[in-house]
Amino acid sequence: LQNTSDSPVAVETLDDVPEHVLRGLPEDVRLFPSAVDKTRLGVWATKSILKGKKFGPFVGDKKKRSQV
Image 1 (tube, one colour):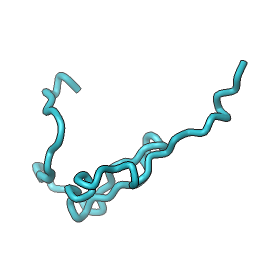
Image 2 (cartoon, helix red, strand yellow):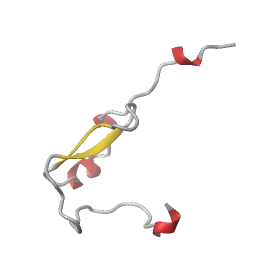
Image 3 (cartoon, helix red, strand yellow):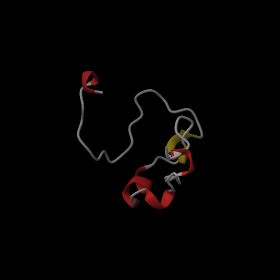
């Protein structure tokens, strides 16, 4: 049996994030290592974000709540 725990794990960095994503982040939002998956970046707020606050631009397909 091969020990897969010795395999290198790719870690997402800011270099992996498209420029348009970085430009679209609000002033008080940063990308840091995820609290859920340390190999990925997560979105962190440096201040409270008010309910209903919108930022973007949105890129992707909109989904209904039942689809996510």
